[in-house]
Length: 466
DNA sequence: ATTAGGG
DNA sequence: CCCTAAT
Image 1: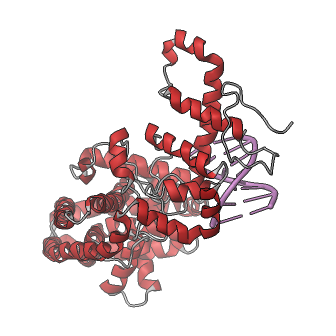
Image 2: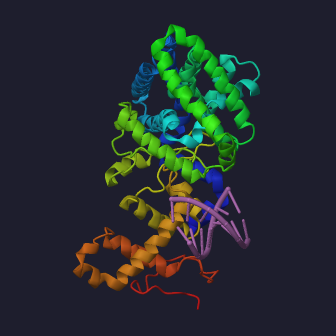
C-alpha cells in the first residue's frame, strides 16, 4: 500500500530517514563515536604505563609473570574504557556504551585468542612447527627487523577489523606484543608465544604453506643461539627455554619430512575453530583473566573469523523480552569499527525473543513476504545480528511451527512434555493470517497485492494459486 | 547484493 | 544456522 510504495521508491534515503525517526539515538552516534574514540584513546595513554610494566620483560623475568601482568593490564584498560564511556552516557549514550562494550567484548575475544595461541604451543603439535617462523618471516617480509615493523604487522593480525582505530585493547595488544618481542631478542622462549600468536593470525591471512620449514628452522637455530647466551646468565629462564627448545627441535628432527606433508594440509576452518575453542577453555581454567565475566551470559565463544562474512556483532545477548525493548534500539548498530574481516556471530545462534518475532511478523505484514532486506533495515536496523536471511529463516520456521500447531493443538496440549511452544496465540494467529496471504515463496499469484488482509479462513491457509 | 531452497 | 544456486 502506501507504506509499501514508499519503501520502494525512496529506498535507502527513506531508510535513513526512518532510522532517524525510529531511533533518534542513531544520528547522535556518529558524533559521539569520535568522542568514544577519544575516550578510548585516553586509556591508551595509560597503557604506556602498562607498557612499562610489560617492558620490564627486558629484565628477563619469567614469562608467566608477564602473562599475568598482561591480563592485568587488559583488565585495567577495560575498566578505564568503561569508565570513560560512563561520562558520555548522559547524552543518550546508553546504547552507545553498550555498543562499545560490545566492541570491547569482541576485542576481549581477540586477546583471548592470543592466550589461546599461547596454549597452542603446548597443545597442538601440528601447529608447533611454524610457531617460530612468523617472527622470522616478518623480519624477512618487512625488511628491517625493527620493532616498529613487527609491531605493525602484529597489530594488523591481531585486529584485522580495526587496525587503524585507536582502541584500548588494540593498544594493549599492540604494545604488549611489541614489548614481548623486544625481550624476545634476549629471551628466546618468549618468542614462542609471540610467534605463536603471529602465526595464528598469519595462517589465517595467508594460506600458510610454502617456505615454512626453512624459515622455521633457521628461526629455531637462532633461538638456540640466543638460548645459549642466555643460559649463563639466567638459569631459571633457560630452564623454561630449553624445555621449549627441546620441543621444537624434536619436532623438526623427528618430523621434517613428515611435517612437511602434514603442513600441506591446511586445517579446516572448523578444525581451527574447534581447536582454538578448546585452547580457550583450557586457558580460561588456568588463567583468571576472563574479562568476559563482566558479561555473564556470553558463553565465551571466540571465533571471530567464523560466521557471516559481514559485520555481524555479538551483543550481550540473551535479552529477555523487556531487555530487548531497551536494547533493541541500541544493541547492534553499525559497527563503526571492525569494518573488514570482522565476522563474529559468535554462536551460530541467537535466540529469537517473542518481541522480535512479533516485530518480524508485523514487519512482514507491512512490507510483504520476501522483502527481507527492507524489513531488516526498517525494523531490525538496530540489531546487527539478524540478517535478512535470518529473518526469512525465522519466518519459515514460524510458518512451519504455526501450521504444525494448528494440526496438533490438542495433542500437544495433552502432552505437555513437548512444552516447547511459547508462542502466544495472538501471534500464532497473525502468523496464520499472513500465511494465508503469503503461502511463502512459491506463490505464483504474482499480481496479488496484499492490500487488505482478509483472514478469510484463519485456520486453514488459503493458497491462491493452484 | 538479494532471495529462494535445502541441509 | 549454514551453504549454494539463481537472479
